Image (cartoon, rainbow, N blue to C red):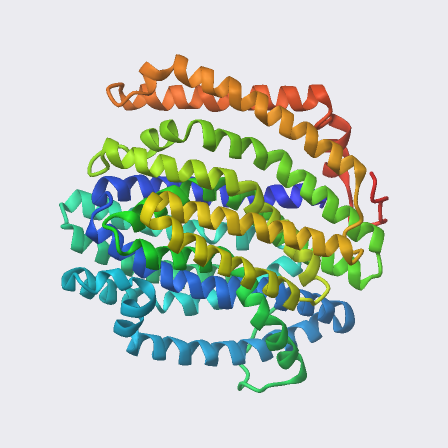
Length: 528
């Protein structure tokens, strides 16, 4: 299967999940708006999500996948199975200890880390503690799910791992539907959602385990032992955990600061959900597919193939991400109004969320580039360098968030996260180039310059088109009119962007054809 087809497999499944995520957030906005129960739920849910990114997705995509790929190359399926069982025994035990400790310490964690601004509101604080206790075991489910996902991706079974997150959105949509239908109070709605998160975690883990069985590998439980393989995994995973969770780390810092302002956490969550659509569909797809492909190419000594994989992946992510960033900047108000403005979600809230979303849009290419750049280190079993870069970026985020929040509130936090993201992407790229791990590709540089021109033309055209359709996008218009007008803007933006990009050489059919038909071997030239 070609690289782009693998991206499409993961991206298509992720797109389905993100579309359902929009449906979920639309129901959430109608049911809870940016009220105290929405703040409490999002604050509580962010915490297990942080640990999931730190100890599951980041660590295992960075450390487990290259080692698992090496075991497959060296010892075949039996060696990979033995390694997986060793890791599973240790991971399960560590997660159980962490979960018990965190459940017991939850009041302290809420007051010091999750939402220190809630301490002055006893009801909001108590609800956040209750919801966090319900949802924290989700971490254990998702960490084991991440390991199973890493196995499937290394075995070139991408779809099951990509489609699993859909179950979270389906379950939460069901919980919100029940709450709206039964007229549940905001507190009862938040409880329904919390139990739904836990149920979805168990369901996702079951689906992935079935996928591993279908791939021909059965995992048994082994008593936890620190074998040389496990020791190597832990050595790689600790810095990778920090690196892989940079976005979540920055967001938890932003949440701590935002908890001092009523409704700020919800504003950040609603804007985050919108820009996560292109980030998930493009960035996560590339990160998931590129790491095992790059690891296998490097282990086999195919340096030219590795260089080509990196350059073509960057070309692909920017080809799709730059127009999304331009659109989020220009029509953020229209997007937020159509998606959220109903029920408890007021026009004033739309203005705040849209302003925050526009800033996140500027950071979107940087966030996606990080997903494409990190595998260049992880596939070489270097997780310390990205960790050092990440720690510097987190420090920048902290300083900027604290400095800007008193003046710009949610927009200040978004600005801090975007600046941190771009600094991370730039330093990762420069480091890879200086080490000779990313040969500079003139064709890539010229394409990016032309894609920027196409994005600028699209953004200007979109601005005029939005003004022309202002009446159909206004709150007084029907929902059907608003959706149709927004759909027309998106269609127009796509036609203009792709038309200009192909016209001036930012993309061409030959490039796409080569990417779609490319096989893993033989190794192509890096300048292709």
